[in-house]
Amino acid sequence: MIPNTGEYCQPPQSSRVYIWNKRAPGALINAAISSVGQGIGFAIPIDTAKDALAQLISTGHYSRAWLGVSVVNLAALSDEVRKEKHLPAGDGVVVLIVQPGPAGAKAGLAEGDLIVSQDNQAVKDAAGLVKLIRRHKVGDRIRLAVLHQGKRLTHQVVLPEQPDR
Image 1 (cartoon, rainbow, N blue to C red):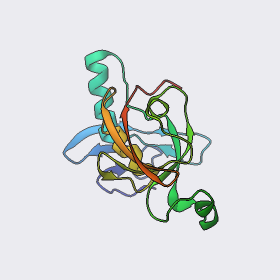
Image 2 (cartoon, one colour):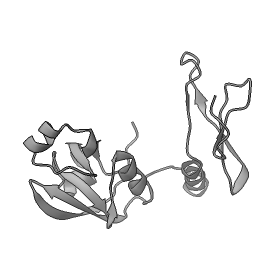
Image 3 (cartoon, rainbow, N blue to C red):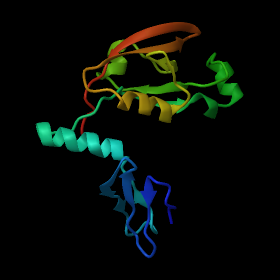
C-alpha cells in the first residue's frame, strides 16, 4: 500500500492509486494497474498529466522534448570502468547510446561522454537529467556541458519531439 504522502494515495481495500496536486486537490489521475503484477501500478506525475491535458485540449496532440540518448549514472560505474574510460569520480551521467538523428547526435554527443550540467544546472544522475529535459518544450535550445575524452565541451542542443514508440 502506498502511504498518503500528499501526492499519492491508495485507498484501503483498493487496487487503485490516485495522484493529485496539493494545490489542486480535485485533480485526480487513476494509475494503471497490472492485473498479473500483484498490485504493481504505474503512476503519472500530476505536472506531466496537467501538461498533457493542456496540450491535448489546445492542439489535439501531446508531445514532449527528447534528447535522444541512453545514459547510466556515473556513480553506478566501477572504479575500473571509470579509469578505463578516463572518467572522474562524482556526479553526472555517461552516454551509452546516441540515437541517430535526434538532438544528441546532431549536437555532437558521443558514446562515453559524461554529461555534467544542462544550462549551468548540475546533472547528478539520470533521473535529474530527465527532469531537466522535461522542463523544456519541443524546439527549445539547451546547453549541455560534457567531458569528452577528458576535455570539457559545451554542446548547443535543439530538442526534438520524442517519437511515438
